[in-house]
Image (cartoon, rainbow, N blue to C red):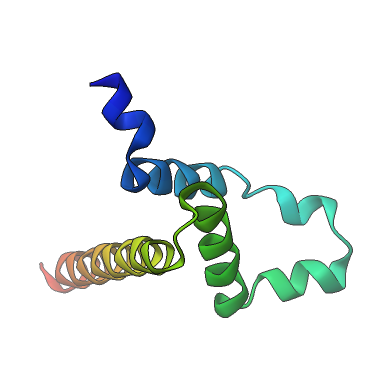
Length: 91
C-alpha cells in the first residue's frame, strides 16, 4: 500500500496541490507590485500547475489535476451562493 502511494503520480499531484494551498501567506513577503500580479486568476493557476508538475513530472496530469480542482471549487462556490440566496429569501 505504501509503495503504491509513493509511486502514484495522482497522489503526488494532490499532495503538491495541497502544499501549494499552504503557501497562501507568500504574498505577505512580496513587494506590492508582485503581490498584485499574484492576485490575477491566471497567475494563480499557472503557479498551481507548476507546483503539481514539479511533483508529478507529467504536464498533462498537472493540467488535469488543476482543472479538476478548479471545477470542484467552482461547484462549491456555486452551491454556497445558491444556499445563501435561498436562506436570504426565506421568511
